[in-house]
Image (cartoon, rainbow over all chains, first blue to last red; front, side):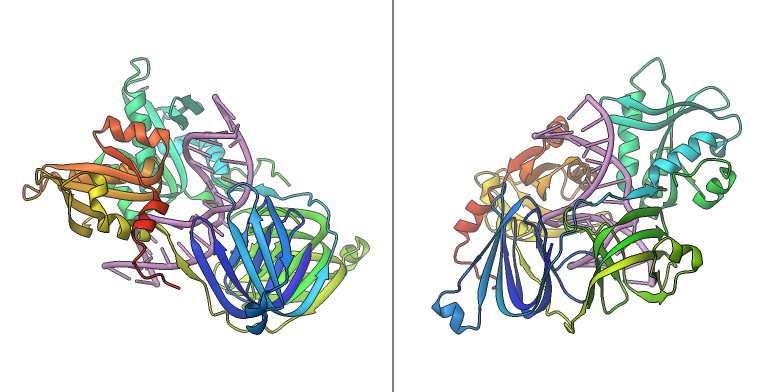
Length: 231
Length: 231
DNA sequence: ACTTAAATGTCGCTG
DNA sequence: CAGCGACGTTTAAGT
C-alpha cells in the first residue's frame, strides 16, 4: 500500500466521464492495482477511484502538460472493462509505502438474516396460533423468507426487510402470485414485516391485501436473550 | 486529514456489531471526525468506518488492555445515532497529518439523465414516425421518463435505465396501469429502453406486452456530436 | 427535513 | 460465472 498526498487533478473515463479540478488530495494505491482518491470530507466513498483488477503506470508529462505544472501522469486502467483513471500530479507533499499483507477480514452480526431467525422463533408475533412451516422456501423466482400457518391452518407467506419499501412489496406480490398457483398450498396470504415501513410501501401492500407488521428488533432481541451471540 | 498506519483491532457497535481482528491497517481520520479503516485490498469500501458527523477521542488502555499489547484506545462516536467505532491501537507504524482544505468537487457526465436527453432528441430510434410528447411527465407515483406518440398517434410511455432490471419493468408497469386509467391519453403502450437488458427483465416485460429496446450510448452520443459537453 | 430513485454502487450467496 | 438481493448502503435530486 502506497499513500501519496499531492496536488493533483483527476479524470475518469469509463461508464461515465468525470473530472476533479486541481486540489490537494490523498491517493491510496493498493497492491491489487486499484486506487482511491480521497479528500478531507465526505463519507467513505472516495471522490474518484479505480476498482481492481487494475494496472498502474506512471509517465512523464509532455511539454504542454509540464508547462501547466504537471510533474507526473499516472494512468490506472481496469484490466477487464478498459475504464481508465488519469491522475495529473502537480506537487507531491508526501509519499509513503507500507506492507500490510492480507487482512483477516470482518465478522458481522445483526442484519436481515438475524431478523428472520428471530421472527421464525417468535412467529406468534404475527398472530395467536401462528406456526412456523418453512424458512427460505425455494421457488423458481427466489426464496420466500418464511412460510407459516395461521390459526385456521391457512398458508401465510412472510417477506422480511429491515426497511420496508416498495420493492419488497413487489417481491412478495410475485411470490404470492406464484404460490397461489400451487393447489397444494393455495390460498396463500401475505405479510410484509419490517423494522420500518415506508408510507408508499404500506399503501401499496394494503391495496393488494398484504398485511403490514412492524417489528421491534430490540424487543425481539431482548426476548431472545438466551440465544448465543456470534462473538 | 491524519493518516495512521498501525497494528490494530476494531469494533463497531451500532445498527450491527462487527469486529476486525488484530492486523496492520491504514486509518484515515478526516477533519469532520469521521474515520476510515482500510486494508490493502477490497474495493473503495473500507473494512470499517464511521461517517460524519462524529467525534473522535483517544484514551489510555486499562491494565488488562495494556497487558494485551494495546497502547491507545480510539473511540469515534456518531453525533446523532450514537453508533461507535472503537480502535484498539497496538503499534503505530506511521502517523502523518496534512491540511487539505475543502475539495472543489466532482463534475460528472453521462448517466441515465444523459441517455434520456439523447433519446428525447433521437426519439425516432423507437420507430419511424415517433414524436416526442413529454419528458419527465409527472404522475402521483413519480415521473414518466418520456411520453411519445407513435406513427398512429397512440401514446407510448418510455422508461429509461442504464441497466434494465426487473424493478424497472415493475416501475413502468405501475405507470402504464395509471396512465391507462386516464381516458385523455389511454390506450398507452410501454417501451423499456436501456443500454443493457437483463434476460429476466426482458422476459417479464415482454410477458406484459412491453417492448424492449437496447440503446447504443456511444452511437447516440456520436450522432449528438454537435451537442456541447459539460467540460 | 423528508422521501425517492440511482449508483462507475459493492458484497456475498446460490444455482 | 451469472444472477439476485442486501447494504451500518451512500448520494443526489426533488418536494
